Image (cartoon, rainbow, N blue to C red; front, top):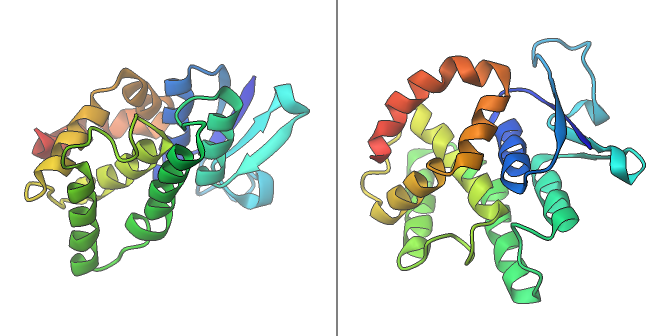
Length: 192
């Protein structure tokens, strides 16, 4: 059993989506980001505690995604090249999509993803943690009113990820996300 300590943040959604996609049993401990008295490992959320592995704690969303993939043997290829592709696109999210602040940089990274997705269903071959991590960030940009209409491959990919039942379940696991899903669906109609 895994304990997930998180809040309704993009990083929190990455982990809840991965847990749902992997169909791992977990207990959600929803935290209020504003409550500084609620603490977890190094004060970071999300964090997990894997009770089946002597209460092994993992924090940072990317590290958690890798850990869960390695634990299950799913959402990441076992061969070196396939694994490297997934990790490259995961790092792309952490160092690129996640960190961009200006419009020109954002459009450049959207273009990179759009070109990668031309002729490819997913970023690194099969559906993987790289798709989960990048989709959550694209979703965040969409929520703030940024359109992907000029990027047809990115738009197609985003629609496909959004339609996955594990993604939908993962989004609804964190309490405040239930309250904003209706508003989000309206924003996400831009993907349609």
